[in-house]
Length: 426
Image 1 (tube, rainbow, N blue to C red):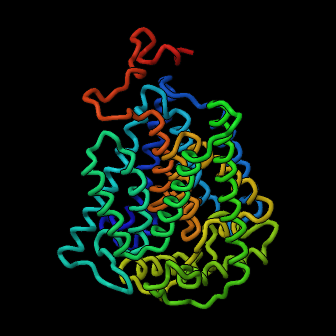
Image 2: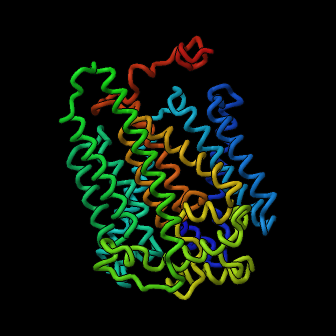
């Protein structure tokens, strides 16, 4: 979408118009479904949105650039509202939740084969790694887009095995060609955690516990594991930021995945700068959506920076934020960061509880947030990851095998209750 926005509106377009239209259309449709009575806003979603509003009020009251924070907060809360309502109503009969992962995977598959076509015809160019000019203006994007596809495609049971393996091979191969550190690292960690979980499930049998209590214990361990990983990401990010320097290290493709200095590479400078802002604004933060580099507050500087980034791909740009967890503390400070961190984890937890696919996407989101500021970003990569995360919850109601009739039996409609299931009558 960012590349499409660039092609349609030109490098001077600072606002992501395509994402803006999609997000507001989604909010409008959600509101329409609520007014018609097909959807409802549950207590959990209300609490989520109230917490987001509280975090927003705190950060607005302490922002160093109030107008910037107001617009940034609106651009975050509007999509968050639509996504929260979607998650809350995901399994109502009018939603067809089990089709959502197929829609997301279909878009990402088109992107993958588009990148493959660019590479085959020779339009990909190399800068320590392979870019796919015309579809992805930066190789890291390839990994961030296709890592969710690699997870999703394994579980699309109504697709043929050969098709799933083909798409998986293409997506992982393209991530490797682009040498996307975050994409590769995220997939490796997800594979390691899921393999360990599967082995423990098969090998460990509680001696005196029934099957039911064994499942409860595994679920408790899974929750603790997700919470532990989340805490490790937050604490580890702040620890790394406290000791890094503002020097820009040119990425070294052969070693960057398996070496901490190479892995962080160009992110060291923006992370260190963000940590400097944390030290200078420890209690209040600099403000929601406020750039780490104050020069980016100048619209002319920001537009020129965007033009260089998207059309020339040089490193002589004002790189902004390089880590979501550091960015949360930088923007919200000690007053607002706990609210945003709790809200973020609550959304991840709700999706992870739906099953193995939701859990895998939640882990992938946590890892990708280490290398990109995607938590508060709801255009381009951030919007893709949030949507993929919510869509993954649809696997909980997916048919276990391919069927000719796509609607499962439990989704049959009762005409007497206005196209709703009988149990949703009230």
